[in-house]
Length: 413
Image 1: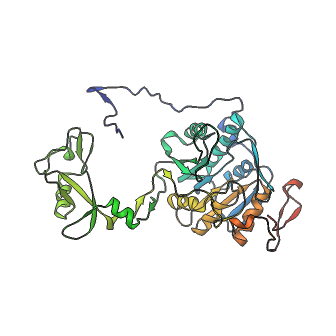
Image 2: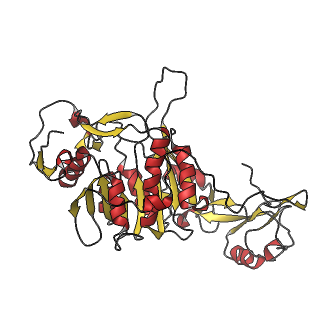
Image 3: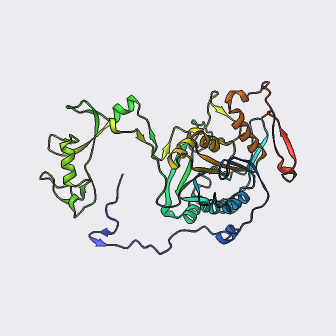
């Protein structure tokens, strides 16, 4: 992989990067509202379906634009959300049903209408984030690139952190002329440069550790790997000077000052090759695991009969949410998901001792979340037709009757 060394010189001469004061690209379309108009949105009708405490653990039933507008006016919430994860509709143009064929949600917006729908909500979500907060937006290939431009506009392109590629399913046997579609994507942005970050690691297995840390230290018997002690780019300071009579390779500099390199060597942390070239020893015992990269192969959605699921369509793997929540929040922080669906974000937050706020406009989603918190999930195979165990009934408001009439939601999902 090629790594640029100089950002400003070509053949020894300074070159211009041809950037303007405001280089952010904007998507233009007829339905686009100004940020001022979006931020002046007045809350409409919604239900605070569940609330525990003054500022956390809330479940709202209604249009998330209305709920987000209300939360923006809540001084205990606005500017205090540490993590937002959303898995919005993907602009598929379809209606999604649960495993029992109940209508779960619609995904009928496309093109500019879809972009503006999500853009308005992203503007309000930015206002809710704390200064150290992060937002993750989960999409597929249909809209990920358009929404990347929108998020650059709203959160700032400098606050873009990752485009995570996720393996969502096992390989597919496509009959049409295309590659199997087994991936979707997560855009990761932060509010500022100073954001909560707990780097996630994959624990070492014996096999992987042995492969990565191939060498055994003769004096201590500890397993280690070798890494360079130089980095790209020339320097005129201490890291550009000689150490032990050696200069860094051309176009490079030492990663550490000669004084630090000397101390590392005294501690037995430098490997000297037969030709006298130094490399640093990285010991396995000091490694918390293999750092998670931006391709996730281990968080695909339910694929066998033993995984517990709710039966709600497009339900995400709870391990996926736990990874994100651990990485971008701490115990006691507030996590928000305004496309709550089956409630995976809320359940994962609850498990990890985070406070949570969930929003959804689907009665099926709300009843699924309530059932999940009370009863947990079912084994995936349990959704095959058979007589189901009768459980107590759950009551909720009926969205089709002005949010006021109570309706009994039975357990026949």
